[in-house]
Image 1 (cartoon, rainbow, N blue to C red):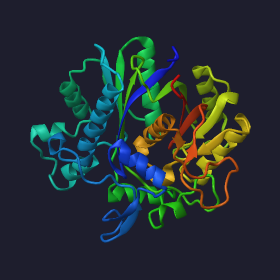
Image 2 (cartoon, rainbow, N blue to C red; image 1 turned 90 degrees about the horizontal axis):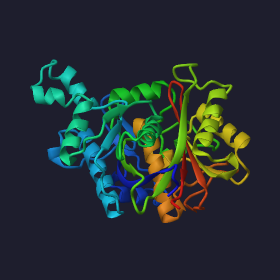
Image 3 (cartoon, one colour; image 1 turned 180 degrees about the horizontal axis):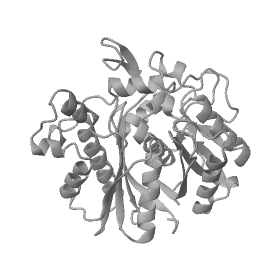
Length: 386
């Protein structure tokens, strides 16, 4: 393993495709979106919307909500997977949880039906620190435990933070979890009103990143977990480095000059010790919105060589908000392991370097970008294991 890099040694996933990383992988290879028509998520009673919602499941002992059960299920799957691939936890295992909107169902019930009254144990379940504390207890982990939040860039932010912990010698290993199961009628309605979420059309008709006719994204949910370590035999992929910046420009819009977005890509490559000429894939944020797709296509054309190809899996997984970039990192890591980039099928004319459907993967570098609402720019650099 590269001395600089950190291995992604175990992967766990709960997504709109189901509970486990294999349903995610099989769903992506099928080319069929995870989204279905979901009743009760629209602005008005009886409305039905297209959404990639996590189905019911998980262990009842893990909590009364899908959020609590999904967070623990994905983390346990990642830990089991890492163990099967040769990882053994060190003395200081840290936990990072990327979360933007946590227990939305519990908070909604707390205010709307419980009048602000709950037993103490149930009230504690509302706190974002509680699932982390109980998970640390379950596994006897004693490193630092912390939440990170950077809107849609939260997954990248968590990976960069985990690597900084490992580089600084604060921990021996990190379990990183990104969870977003926030699809309530109120949240869906507000993203529609912002003009970015589409609920009234099939995903491949609505969300077409880097293609003509794209209207925006289908909303999704997920919990994705990784075990990150330098002490495993068979990592899926290596995190070489990354960078983050902020536009400091607007609450929702990207600075049209793209100076800070571009600098973030440049800084990530410098941090990883990789020249732009070595980048083979751009695993893009690619939400299908005009401004984000234009920004990333511009960076692709200006910075990277002609054989760098681009893809976004959001037409298939949905936009999983705070867990979005973590889902997409899992796709790259599994792809290196299995020899394929599970790109969606193209459905309209688009960027000449856009991958069309599952494609054989090369051993080259992947840059994973994520542009969070409000100006959160993030880029990480991933490589296949040596």
